[in-house]
Length: 319
Length: 244
Image (cartoon, rainbow over all chains, first blue to last red; front, side, top):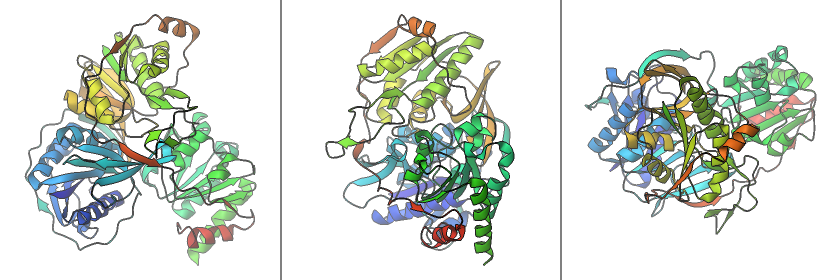
């Protein structure tokens, strides 16, 4: 019995999401007095670093058939590794790939599955995990009774902790079927952290009056090292690209800091952002519903407040 | 081309969420139910568009009791040709996937929304694909037919990618796939005459089910900061919230 995490490196490196998995796996393994293993699918220069965040054994597999992500191929490989390593709990990230894998693993391993787990399991006689449901309006607790269990871990749910030392990754021999999916093209967004992974997000809405005014939003984001986002009406009118739209029908995010500028806070918008750790709302309307969901609020003209905030952030960073 | 679209009934986005029976059961009193928006706006509308372009048929399938029929009729009004309702109250993703799999053979394309807005699981599509032994692409925001193949674009970490795959396939649909359609009067009238077949459950196993619910800790209340005092805001974000 052991806990196994499966990771696909992005551009040859394991990022913070992978280290969050490592810490989650070790905390889980400690509760069950067992070991935490990692299966790294593809080349990663920093695979050994998983050891620092809690992984005791790192297994690596590099294979041509893994170059395109085909969930059918990846799932079979992970299930095979779990069998070989005697892992009864498999954890993947709750990102686009993880979501394609989790359900397949549940079937392949006859395992109970919970997606988007938001904290380490509660210790106790029955294995219990929790997740946020109803778009953050409630928390659900699941008891898993099956001998095999598969979980996906929500990004930013816990922070990587130093729990060990760097380890030497060892190659593992597994059969890898040929993918049925063929990669046609790949577009990488560069220059900023993608929204679902961003720790800080600066978002703006109709209060901006027009796309030509976005400079002040971008300056604040640059000063904070944040990713920019927008509300649905702004994306729908073409002021900003659709991939920036956060909310129920756009991207759901859970950064540590969410700054909402000139966004009234319609319930559909809140559903996509209310898992953010800290919410700052800047709006000229003191009655804007967003203030009810905020931690910090500023009532004022955003065209004055935002540049002032940018200056204050710069002053703080330079101090 | 035969397309199957899996649709769920979910509480309306604006619903006040609460639980009864010691947090074990969802309190459905006063709740307005809708078709899960991702199923409706993206999966179903794209299926109807593909049918309009390439011919074929669109079947919608729902796992639920008779109270689901209002959303099933809406799907028929939007343009689905027929519907299947598996007559059992759904309690888990595994159960739903297994009940649907029993009726999902013989389709060229099986579509789901990227997740439901109640339990946000995003599991049924992948389970269904594994049960049917088919390729699966999650979070697809573009889908085109190219000869015998499908061209699918999906979100990945740090970007997007476009894939080519021969059918049949299972896909989960995300924003960008299609635009919301409002059923017109003709569609609503026609929907009443379209077949809605109620079939018995196969008694699929449920796997893990929710043991209990709780409400998230309430926000301690918003702290207001004067608009000319942004230094204080930065200080609070650093010292109190510890986010910068």
